[in-house]
Image (cartoon, rainbow, N blue to C red; front, side):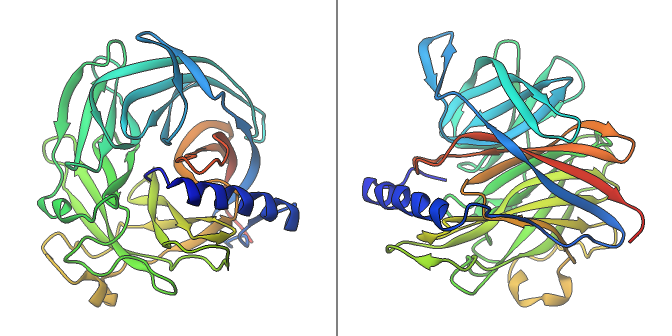
Length: 351
């Protein structure tokens, strides 16, 4: 998400202050699903404004747009419109609440792009996949020295993305054989972007990493922008900003909605099962006009966080049926906090 003009920033700062005064408890979990997954918000921890960097006295932490778990207490986040990654340690409580973030390390990768999300590469030299929405492309960089280590091709249709509404999400499937990504809002031939009262249709794309692993594209409808009290003039938006792959075609989909008012942002988390969904890879246009091709989705959490929540990843297991789920916020020049947000993800086996 690009930096906003100064007048927009000033107005949004006022809006955020007023919103905090109006509603001291803006978070709310969705109703518990009878069988499936349940998500509870567990708080957040703020990140520093700056960290030390090898080639610069300091690196300002702004525009954090994706995060992934590296194992143990190690995580890495990516900064958009930069060539920078941040590796850090995160301590979490037994219920998934983030307690503290520390040991920040800046990593400079070989190419600067508008990176929007990050996922770990599990084989070979430690590395990460980064998706960027300029080209668009998924690029691989080593963590030890930031060197480029290949690219993962995207379907040709992805090149028809709208400006700043291209691939915003990236997740590695537990089978290690696929990556998942999605365009934030509708590709130009597929339909209209989100607008007041109107959603948008995007493609959830499964990309093979191994020979013989089949690709897949699934049509997914994003909700319209959330209701807000207008404060000033400006655009509305609503799109897919993060994916979490759960295996066997199941995904958590994070929708982010924004508008020039109160509250400025809303986050929605849906579960999706693509295992029996229609493959729309052969359809080149007008997905918005094909409601019978849309995959179903189930809301498991929504909230007006007062944050621009852009990244999401699975963290460590909390016990046999619970998992930490970590998000990261992008201040995007809007003077909202840069935080790691914690959730508790629970498997629900009975009402």
